[in-house]
View (tube, rainbow, N blue to C red):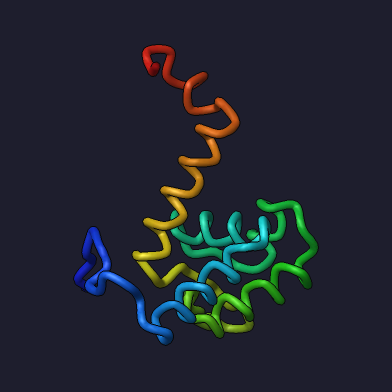
Length: 118
């Protein structure tokens, strides 16, 4: 299991790490990819099941998965003629959780869900 830190090791990222971080954000800059990754952190899934869940054509979901796989954010396995995908990076999961939590606070959904929040 990867060792996850609360803070980066360096005070200022070097060029290589800044590029990797920017690349990760580019992969997460598409709402459909965010939805796909979120679902894949919950459970392994096929292209068709993901397409149905996110409301996108299978071909588009397949293209998103190819990009996510090349970026190392998802892994796939074959079972017969079917491919199944799963999310592969716990750091990205943590990033997604924080970002989606932020989105819920921006829209007021978080406060609506918790009547005791201030």
